[in-house]
Length: 290
Length: 234
Ligand SMILES: Nc1ncnc2c1ncn2[C@@H]1O[C@H](COP(=O)(O)OP(=O)(O)OP(=O)(O)O)[C@@H](O)[C@H]1O
Ligand SMILES: [Mg+2]
Image (cartoon, rainbow over all chains, first blue to last red; front, side, top):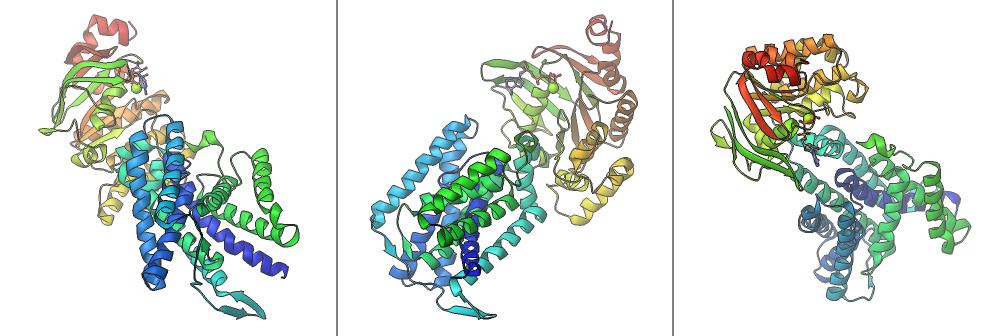
């Protein structure tokens, strides 16, 4: 493989990390919670897509749409049932609950679908020739869809009423309420949005890795979380940048050093960046956040 | 217009507001004065629905709002300029004003209202594209007031609008409050600067460690010996 291929691979997996990292970062921005159950949403989205396509014979578009809606609702339900009652308590109880939710989802899926990995059919078969180079269709779709979603999300957050409400609630919950913003709805929307993006990330992931299992969300979620922290948690552009950095670093390590070292390098980058700039590449120092 | 009846507010085990009652009639300027920690902000936050009273009722325009959500209370016509201004620092001046009109739908009305705010506070117009975090304290206070007005409130509550401002600016802010009142907005003004507040107010209440100590017309309070001694510098 050429270095360009490796970079394209890195951008492909990086855009998946970025989509997932957006969920971590938006939720952190608004409720200051590291939502450890977020990785599990990818897993649930993958199983949903797999089940509706392979078992129910649904067309890909319907499976994807269904996964997005299902995961968005799941994210909102988790927030309502597990996190909202703890909103005014110490943050550590919220964090522990998130870990609990994560185990719950893993075990629930394992109970329903067994622990054995399931094979995923190729959703985007074929390839694309461009300027003498061949790209897999799944890479092209992944990158294009992700970039569109990222642009869409940043426009939504910057310009729409709900986006402005999200930013206002992140900055100052009480004052946002004094503007007439319903904080519960805004938080709920944020969880739904993040989880919907994770569902799309799930489908894109499955389109090139073909295999799913109940524990798949942990490592994927962890990498995306690293991406969010690397870019500066709470920052949307940071999550995107972090996702690409992690994806490309991982791909280049796999290609030129060793596959076994890829994860070590990813966490190594995180540690180095946090030593140099604790708030992440694009993050604001903690005291400026509020 | 607003009737607060026997509220008791707690922070955990701290009994911050103890059986407080008072009322505001339409068109009035009413001031709530008291030392640091007396519970003034707590009362405003309870009226806004950010805190809840364990007992009693708060009625606004003959509706019990003591269990109504904060965002609905804004829609009913109460705006609250919080202590310390609390402008959205990462939003521009104009975006802050737009946030103040969050409950309104009509783009053209919002635009018109922003125009009115700019006429009242020309300084804000000059700084409209600047992020609010870069404004001076006085400018932030104007923005916080302008933002509250954007909801077109019937009752405007201001929590220490003069805090940290130079005397000239304080005078300007009080002039504006008076003008707002004359154009039909009822005002609940919380102040440590009791003399200034009592000069523009119709009536006043004196709060002491969570209890209502005195209630009288502003003129009477200005002449009261105990008020003079404790709040007007002798
Ligand atoms: N979040 C909180 N947690 C615990 N106690 C609080 C909290 N906020 C206020 N208090 C306490 O409640 C009491 C009333 O506080 P409040 O802020 O209402 O006073 P205030 O009259 O507005 O004072 P200031 O003039 O300093 O603004 C004080 O004793 C204060 O220490
Ligand atoms: Mg106060």
